[in-house]
Length: 106
Image 1 (cartoon, rainbow, N blue to C red):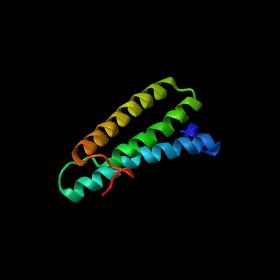
Image 2: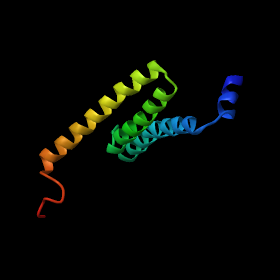
Image 3: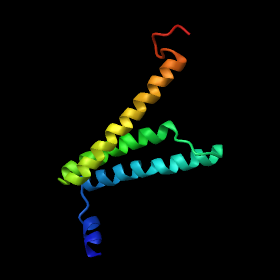
């Protein structure tokens, strides 16, 4: 258990960066839980996918910094999946609601 204390005792900017990534990534579960509780059914809000992507990207770069291939591969796979889900969400939103943005004359 001393390695745990030593890890925090030798804190640097990259370790703090990795911790922030994990905090962002972990917060997605709280967001999903609260959204589901509010609606009384299981839902996955858009914020869940953004938190997944942002947390995944941050922890991916931290994994590169610590040179941990298992962590790098896992985070890269997640980033692809989260990005793809956001793509599907926005594609479906455009198809349902039409083109959005400044080019629209609403």
